[in-house]
Image (cartoon, rainbow, N blue to C red; front, side, top):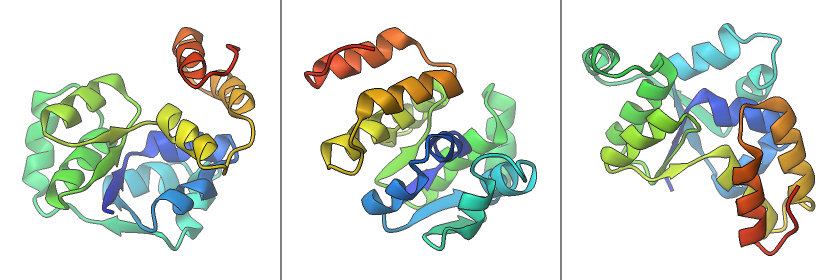
Length: 164
């Protein structure tokens, strides 16, 4: 399975203590040099920086055509991390791209990519038995990100669990 990632799911999962669970789902994750810079260099000392830097199962790949990134930046109101993750996903013919930003997710889907976000990843960890308490993880997610509790409650109900 080929997976490209933006910084947000990597950082959020690091904040929640679930970063290493990614490797149980994906033997290899590809990130662009832009995402690497955002998380490891600019984010040095912050959650996710050391995890990404040390993860042997994360491979940094340079985009084949940087002009595509610059053109996309002119066209879409998204950051370099999101855009480069989408473009890398297209270049690699990825099975999935890990993205949280709503507009980035919309663009990736329009480009024919399957998208997985932090909420869906946490659900998958739970369903596969890697995460014992999804509700506790969702409570931490609420504390560490800008997410609507109603969405999390909907996802919990869909899994037969009580809302937060």
